[in-house]
Amino acid sequence: MIGRKRQQAELQAARQSEYSEFVAVYGRRRVGKTFLIRETFGYSFTFEHAGVANGGLREQLSAWKSSLADAGFFADKSPADWFEAFDLLKEVVRRAPEGKKVIFIDEMPWMDTAHGHFVSALEFFWNNWASGRKDILLIVCGSATSWIVNNIFKNHGGLHNRVTHRIFVEPFTLAECEEYAQSRGLAMTRYDILEGYMAMGGVPFYWSLLEKGLSLDQNIDNLFFSRSGKLRYEFDELYHSLFRSAEKYIAAVTALAGNRPGLVRNEIAAQGNIPNNGALTQVLEDLEHCGFIAKYNAFGKQKNNAFFQLIDPFTLFYFKFMRQDGQSSEHFWSGSRNTPLRNAWEGLAFERVCFLHLPQIKSALGISGVVTTVNSWQCAADGDGNPGAQIDMLIDRADNVVNICEMKFSHAPFVIGKDIAEQLQHKLDCFAQRTKTRKAIHLTMVTVYGVAQNAYWNLVQNSITADELFKP
Image 1: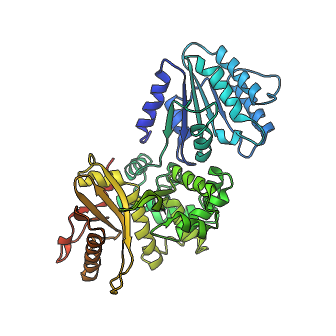
Image 2 (image 1 turned 60 degrees about the horizontal axis):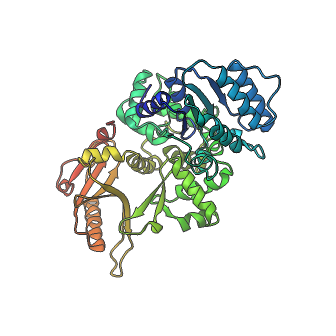
Image 3 (image 1 turned 135 degrees about the horizontal axis):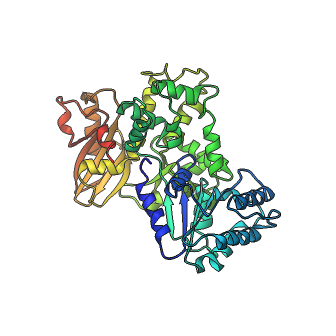
């Protein structure tokens, strides 16, 4: 298995515990949650069940009866309700051999149908029976992360604080994507992997669709722009599988997709036409839990001035090339190299990849053990006609340094010309003057192949290349 060592260790610790354990595994669709659990337990469970997509209560209970049969318990008919369903599960456990009984319930959010009282039955099963034993390992899983968070983690009823392990399965890092590509025999350079990550993120299922013998551009054409492309309609399927009332979530990411620096809450409400109330709070929290957006505080500002950025590479790719431009050519991507449209996307997408690899950037700076906060900063033009400035990534360090990070995507070592040098110096001067910080200011360049040495490269205190982003 590629990666997932920490998650596997936590699952194994739960199995070896002397007490019953309640484990919730969550993460976005296609990220490999089910594969992780099955591989960890050798595809052997006392009871395994998966909810039925778009199924009503009758279909869910009928599927439960089928899973009971797979576990060796043959009921005469489907259970009448979820309370009876969990009573039948008790019989499966009672008949099982000595030792820890591993119960795996996948896609649990689909089982919570209207008027089905599923959560109440789950609460009763755990609190009144399973938790009183020492031999139960209950693993619940689901792609609808918002449901897991709101109904399991934030439950204020019988499941309050009952989960003993929360395991979040994140997308792969660049290093894990490289390892995965090598394991499948894909001949890809690090540049290819970086570009693939900029389009697909680290979702293992997407990477599993890449075909040997094709270039990355050919693969992206086949997956995204071909009429039968396996990811051509993934956007709608993704958001509707993760969120009920997905339209609100799509409206929020649509607003953010059109604003590179990000938006504050009020702007998301206005541009997404979403009421600025608790419903928007829920939308933003759910999107953040799923890893689609990130929340940052502006340097020197209070938390209520936080702004949000869309950071999911796949969603950014969709809005740039598949939704707004409606590309019809099946070879669009192969023909787009070195075009202004693609070059503009590369700059933004590389920035987002850098945000997703902050631990690697901190490691390259030698500050993994230093307390830091990541902020953004911007200032408007002043009354004297001096232009404003925008800093997308600012690492504020406890050791009296601020790293102002400039992320630049290029096909060769990045050249700082006179105009760019003036822009960078303006940012440094603006930040120092407007914030009146007493910390040392380090200009940090994050590029693909490094910074070319010329008359202006001495502006740079730290140069980080893409190779550093590939480190574990």
